[in-house]
Length: 459
Image 1 (cartoon, rainbow, N blue to C red):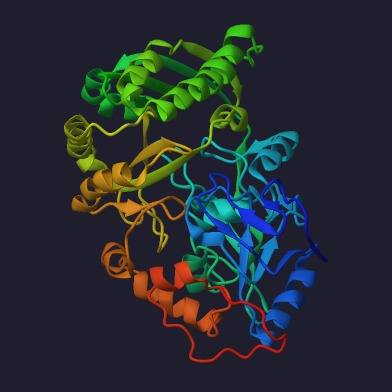
Image 2 (image 1 turned 90 degrees about the vertical axis):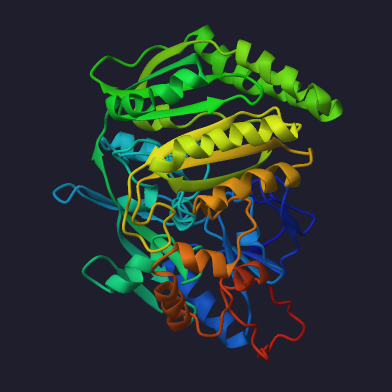
């Protein structure tokens, strides 16, 4: 283990850390890189004795201050890779810091894969499950639903393994935990035999996608779409399993992914930032630039798409049966208030699960994500759309912008108090709390904090 300064994947510069979208900044007293579970256990036990406060950061892809710390910031970048595999059980155990892009390739080398993923593969596996990261497909849950076991190092340095049959209450709380119960040192995942997927994308009218929504969701393994505000069009994406061979990457495939979806978007977004009134025109130009795509590759390579243009994002889960009504209200709100937005709205779908703090807990869900180009004002736009989500009992993504408080969230999650009880049991001193999480979960600040290292800041 070593405490380091300098650059951590481009996020720590001159002692100041920032997340991917630059919406959160902090100045940790130390950025620490444990090398194994024993090292992590020793560190945490010492931090608890000293009254320190600790947060863990993965790729920094959360838009909220979930990883913010002015005291100890732990990176699990030194804890990556597959620890073991059980071919009979169909499971693989990986270290918590393993990045999804690395995990995909390492699983591929073993002939297996995760059953579903989101469209970004930069996160660590621990960070992805802790915030409820998800992909799309009504037959699939979030990445956390693939978890069958966890190894957690708690505030006092204890190492706990949990599953459905061992410490089951902790397991239910820990699969989506926002890093509040301890540091997820290792994750045991259910995997499937590797599969090839065919991705087909095309430009389509929003009215058509909404009219065909049920058939699109049920007739395809994965379906999602993007709608461009101020137009009746968007991009529909269909993904299905296939036995066809992997297609060779050709010029037009790369052109569509890199140039149109990133390079052109960057240029158009800069124009929109300089001249916000052009946003509706830019939406129409972007829509016209969508070109069809038809390719086959292994699943982990199909799920992920390049994200080179930085933005701010808010995403809510709403009950699946309310999705058409919510989208109608979103369309109307944008038309009425004329928000200066040129980014498309992303719509995805997932099945219900039983995880306490999952945004799909006990209900089939539709996910609606709104974005704003980095550097442009986004709060008014997000607030206006958030009002609609809230009226439909929306649940905000734990890693993305929102303004909900503990009272609202408690009403949305039947096991809210159960989670808080587990958190209090595992971390009674609150070393894993920062100001943001203390407010989000309505946890009172301690009257005094024992601190044997003098003036160490608390977060």
